[in-house]
Length: 32
Image (cartoon, rainbow, N blue to C red; front, side, top):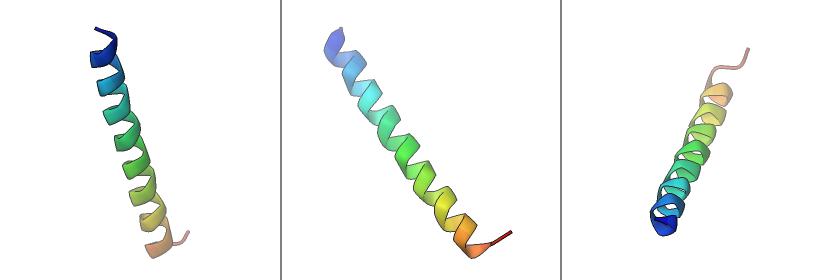
């Protein structure tokens, strides 16, 4: 059970990091 939780937590963290990188790139392409 703990391993499953850690597995999903790891995937969730990676997805958050990936979206943060995408958002950062979009901000560079379209400056305010």
